[in-house]
Image 1: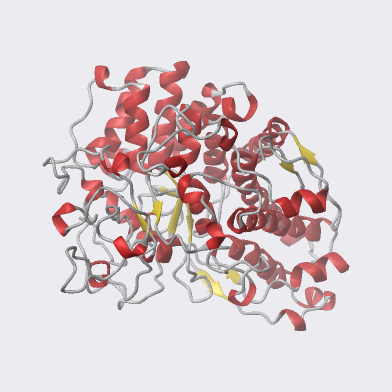
Image 2: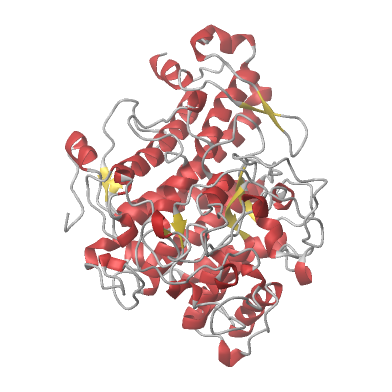
Length: 556
């Protein structure tokens, strides 16, 4: 029973499954009162609670709001925020101007070291979540929940969900760190997981997801809001296969397209031009964006996998809170720039981030000063029209306003069916908001399908249709066949998916991360400079290498 006790001790508050689709009920639990005997009293309830702890590991910090990583700030240790720092901060999409924060090292310049606290914390976040998923499966398989036959279908579904969530962690582990320790439900608790080659983990994880998809095809299960299912499994396969050549040396464009089209066929019908996309881009990043998630209240299900935030036990300093507060500061009358917390219906901002000129220049602008744009995706930005400069002569908070635009995408306003602010439905302004975080959207799947097609997997006319759904929703003119190329598609993907934890991965796949394309302050040079090629992988944390006897990535 040691394994189950170790697992339960981590669960201080949990989400329980409701019988109503779209509901998440909070069931706080004092872990000190739980014993093996409790499971026999109400096996289903306690299985729900333990599964809820798995879900919480992706939504917030840890039990009782504490950080799951010793010595690492709880807000930074949250799944979305940890991923954002490694995926976005070293790229052209975000400057980290709070340079006094030693936990980040020199990541804002694209320079990682094995001793950087944030790299260790992010790696640990992923491994902790993998462990939660594996221990839930082991707990079911070892019979500790005392389940009868009537509960077996539910347990089987939870096991599938744990495998999907574990696979998501391995996507980021393989993507960021390459050869990493691999553990599944067959790995003994307390053992040191073997470090496997990147391509072998790719093969194991994609096979797991393929098997899950087949199970869902044989026995369909309706995906509930806040949980994962067949579309998330397929979407993760799309991400793996899109990057297969990077991870394994062998491309898999045909598989990427096949799974993309399966998702598109399931979700198209309602929404913008029958594409399954929301009618207005901003609806996906507003406080009531939960309705556009699979299992939500709207027929449009563009958000394939969303991280819920609207319940007290799920609120964190990541997700929507981070994606609003991380950029903002309120101006004073003496400032040359103007920004108000009220613009985004919040009460606080941290003044930690701005964006870089090269990213801003990827959008169409109405003026040479890049003040206003016909692209609706920059509707809520702070630009030169508000006194901000697109340049960044110095990365520090003292120069806020003159060191980059604020590419605001998330807001704490509720939007109506036409994409307009609904003040009656909007919450009272606060400093910790309930905006769900879209991890994977259908728009990403359309763009991934188009990329696979342009690599020879399908018909270019179909790719053009997919991309023009994205452009026309953004109020831009549709492209002609001659305007669609791999290079133009790369920029469209940047414009559509900015700050959604794709950018570093995309740049590496395009061969433009370490060299071939520079941006301000890359490699600590104001105008940007190439990085060493081995920076395409992060180093394994030095403490992990030492404790596990693992092999460090080359160059570190």
